[in-house]
Length: 326
Length: 236
Image (cartoon, rainbow over the protein chains, first blue to last red):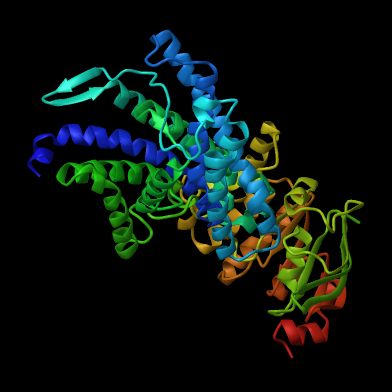
């Protein structure tokens, strides 16, 4: 307990940068839930695919650890594009291949949920088993081992102190992660609240039938939200590799569940709730790890989830993508 | 003929709600469809807008068979509806709701002109432009629903029960504005329980009973038809 109180500033900074990544992933759950009332459990693997896209790209380009800034920045931007395309693409593919046929058949919600879990498992095994067996020899650094527990992604940026107040240090990684996450979120928020397509998304979220009466093509809105959520997960994947420096085929499970918790905590369906929930969860986790031991931090995430569901099932900011101006 | 329904049938599961109705709307007309609760008025409107698939018959709009056309594309063709119960987007501002009406359009100048026209018809909406639509009164919400539909610049404006839940004075006001919209050149198909207002404003009208058209004529004829008076106007 004393360690926490003595270093509360440092723990808070660490927690915020951790939570910013959860928040980006949480947006994908929230967008899809807001429009379809579906918990897309395959979204965790959308994030995982993003980290693999980065790993593959960096391996092919032979990116080294801690390159000079003139190399690191374009490499990071390339990683963002690649991960955005891969995650956005896989999210869209899952929607078209798995959910669209179910919607056409008016399947009950439970079928969607089970399908989502099934898709999630398939993707984990594709990256953990199938690709290593099929193309492992082509890219041994990435797919050389089956279900490799930790694949290192080269660190692009060194941790260097940027600002020190008392014994709290804000370093380069904190800044990059938080700034990038906030920029992505502001972009998404502006898109949803200020553009014509964004209005279409909110209209479908509020009332799909009336949206159709206004000429909104619901199918296109659904594709759009999967892509948007995927791109956000791709950005989160980049920040994850910058911060943590490794990935694995099963990475999505814990990150995804925490991002889902963040989405529920803030109010699922609510974009700003995802930000709030993500940051809160990151901070609480870091505090919890400081009090007990880091091995317990995952437990706290789920304790919070249970508590939220018991006392405030609509989350801190309430649900709904359309209401309350997203 | 701008809009024509030919023997349109709609079923909910095994229960048929519309047993083959035929009606038409000519350019420039106000056509009313009156009937009691459950007669199938809203089902007819939903079928025209494409929210309900047909189990038989055809809908012809502007010479094109739109029976199987997706709902959003019917808006592009020029059919826009102010649905029953208004169904405004409560979380959006009044202006955003109006912009939703123009969702399919790209002609900025035209949209601005139509917004000015809607504000002209409903000055109250201009005053409340920045307000969340959910905070409007029932009458204002109805104005917003009509204004929103007008923003699509429809060839045929579909109005489903514009008088629902409104005080008599407001109902009269809404129908005065409907007449004005018609005089500005928009063709209107209006579904109503308030037969008095609808028939006195409509050029022609149809009476719908349990999924069938049982009578048609000019608004004036039906207004003075003894059977209609007894059934829908509460006059013996």
